[in-house]
Amino acid sequence: MNMSKDKPLERIWNGIYVENPVFCLILGMCPTLATTTSATNAIGMGLSTTAILTASNLMISLLKKVIPNRMRIPSYIVIIASFVTIVEFLMEGFTPEVYKALGIYIPLIVVNCIIMGRAEAYAGKKGPVESIFDGLGMGIGFTIALLLIGSVRELVGAGTIFGIKVTPGIYVPVNIFILAPGAFLVMAFFVAIMNKLKIGAARRTGWDPTENGCADCSGCAHRNNCSGKVSSEENTEVKS
Amino acid sequence: MSIMMIALTAALINNVVLSQFLGICAFLGVSKKSKSAVGMGFAVTFVLTLSSLVCGVIYRFLLVPFGLEYLKTIAFILIVAALVQFVEMFLKKFVKSLYDALGIYLPLITTNCAVLGVALINVQKDYDILTGTVNGFFTAIGFLIAIAIMSFIREKMEYNDVPKAFQGFPIVMITAALMSIAFFGFSSF
Image (cartoon, rainbow over all chains, first blue to last red; front, side):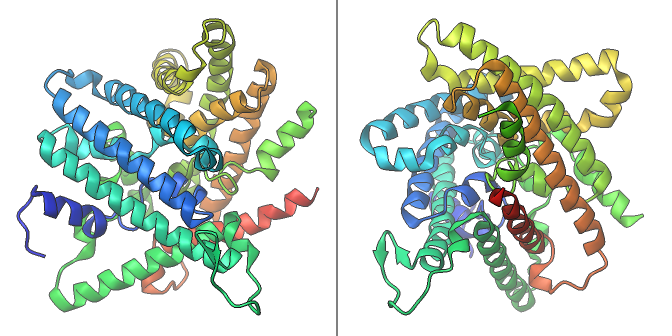
């Protein structure tokens, strides 16, 4: 894909495929695994995260000149937490069933690494328009990933999609897929498929999928905190 | 529910990582070597116990009397962030050996959802301060158990021949799935 950087379309494609937050950057694992018991829950989580991500990206990008560099992490946290509280109220009022199903995982959007990661890696440096589209792209990528995982888990584990029965009566649902182990299992296979696609693409075009920072330090929301110390400590020990 | 039962539930039956999916980032990110995994586990234990206590006190004596319960998300995350900074400074100055062991993991804990998650669960289940702190401590013990086992398995896995597409993250997730099935055994108690 040849698209100039920081254009709206490029940002959205980047969030959906190139740097998909779930399958490529492996960020935001807690909500990904916990709220994908059904397709409906997955959409609810995905959309609320998208809304918060876009709003906080815009806000942080507008305030980046005002926020002193040393105080930026606490400021980001307060901004994100405020938006989360707003969304929590809105969901409680308008979609009480989804609010109940997602429960504690809505306030936990505050510590979703994707939002903090985007604030640090993108919104804190770029202009408001690009930041909105970056947030939208990442949010849509997150929603699609959640929807995929949620649909597979619901289909195999309960024989339904969005609560509608789709499998023939002879099929006995494999309950474990809507329980905790199923989340890990489905996620593992999705990332393996993504890896397979990337390995294939690399063989055809000579593009190295690993150089883009998939699942290494550059995608990690904590890299400014740890400045690569944890990862380098682990890697040196592995090598020696 | 007795304290004993809460402790058992928090540590094993409702394991924070394997059945509630909290603290997954740290669980996957820092479990390559057993030394760093155990270090992370103890750092989380330390912070989680303290933060459940402090969040419980602030919620009971500050937010509830003024009718500010809806601010709990913002309040708790700020308490956790401040607490982590404070603990780091305190350890650096007074307990150097502990700081050397836990130092690099402490800043990562601010965004560990287990810490905020437990504070919110304590409020949701209406635990008093003592019960909440016990819940926090044993949840952290559950985290320590899970991350330690995971790191031991991953060290062994270094020598295994894993299919290329499954190398790295996917095989770790499959290991976690098997561990999660094993932990299901506890729920039949």
